[in-house]
Length: 301
Image 1: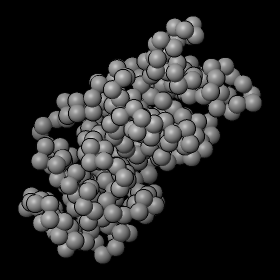
Image 2 (image 1 turned 180 degrees about the vertical axis):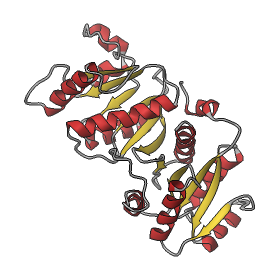
Image 3 (image 1 turned 180 degrees about the horizontal axis):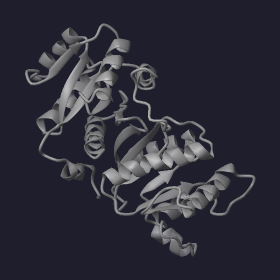
């Protein structure tokens, strides 16, 4: 799969995924959600300040007649209602509107009504890059800051779930570091080597290959591998880039967007349902693509 819009091929046409919009009184999210509805991707459930939602709908010529609207007096109430709907099977996945991320995640992790699974929550970005021959996933550049070895393993598993929802036959994971050899003075290389050992012991399931440590060029460039005489099934063919910390993930992701003209979609994994966390700085395309990605994952759970 080369382009994000090809994700529509994976959606069943029997029904739209039910999308709960948390604090839906956010204009740009509302526009993206409405476009996804018109394209037959989602059936939105708008939760929040209904008067404000209607104001934005009138301003942007959005017809709310086919939408379910649920009043919430606060961001906390909006988040709780949305999470409960997913828990009860009344919604398939969530998207963040005007609500703060911390408030939404607090509801997601609530012990009474939340969406806990025992897994680590982590953010997975999918990128469409003009000069790469397929979609590539990056994790975690937005949520998990300094993961230890076990957390990295969980982060990999969440990203594998995304790739498998997109019908990848074999998922190739590159554990990034600055060098290709394990160096005790460089913790990222040590963890990468141990993650490869875990893969070799069957930790990550069937049809998955985990390689590391790998520098970024070796993960994505066959030419670089040829020059450096580096051989691996993942070499120049990475599907998932596991970064050792949030700084590397944030830097690679924003470089793809601003230097590489890449398009993106992002989703939080590890809960009972995908959670789409969008930023106000995200483009319309990024918001729309994230809804599309979340819908595909929800449809394949």
